Image 1 (cartoon, rainbow, N blue to C red):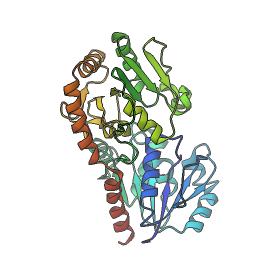
Image 2 (image 1 turned 30 degrees about the vertical axis):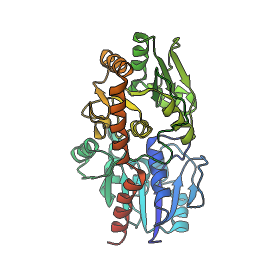
Image 3 (image 1 turned 45 degrees about the vertical axis):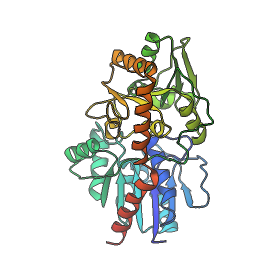
Length: 356
């Protein structure tokens, strides 16, 4: 072991978002190099396999303030127990701010939602967290550019990864020949309702919606939506098990993710690593363009282009040879984002900062 690493993230698998999944993957995969500890407000129960020690503190309102003032002793207690040589915060708020004044070097990985369009006190907290951070990382170029413009900090760009052990083509899984799969929160910004409209226009195909956490729209706040009931639409509850989710990808014909905004979405990589063609969206703040090359390993359309979405789905369904070509290229592309490759970049960064 080269030292003690404390990773900070608010939630644990299985009930968490992409940012928390990234935090957990990094934590468990660098455990061969560091004595890894994890501070969280989550009561999740991931398979820790004895390689990460989890420290849970209560989830409180206004955590950047309360854990910096009234309840700072709870953070100090964890810091004394762990005595970290380096800290890796996922999200600037709350952890980047709460841990801004501790002694060890601190890396903040920004995941996007916590830094975009923030004003007033939140913006002050974000700026303070970034100012005190030893290094900032971002999973994509557009977010790194945004952070530099808005907050004056340069980022090290390290993409998210995919677990190729779980997400892979499965020859023993029967594949549907007319099913479109959506994986993600039932959220307006994710384009779920756009895909429903495509389902209306294409009644000959099935549309499977694998839902948000526990399939409760309330979990995504005001953006949460319910999927309308249509004869060719099927909603599937939240699937916490990665192997079961990979089986679902393998059952589908193609995958569609018509989001308005994404940082570096995991679902596209998961689908591609299972050998599925992806229809996704393009744009100045849409991370699918980081790894999907239009016409080579997937199809990219404009957000809210329901006609283009429907045409792309129909084209792939009716052209099996083209679909196979894209699938082959998608597999090759996904292999470049194997978590083992990505985490090595984090390991090098963390060790370098720790020994400066």
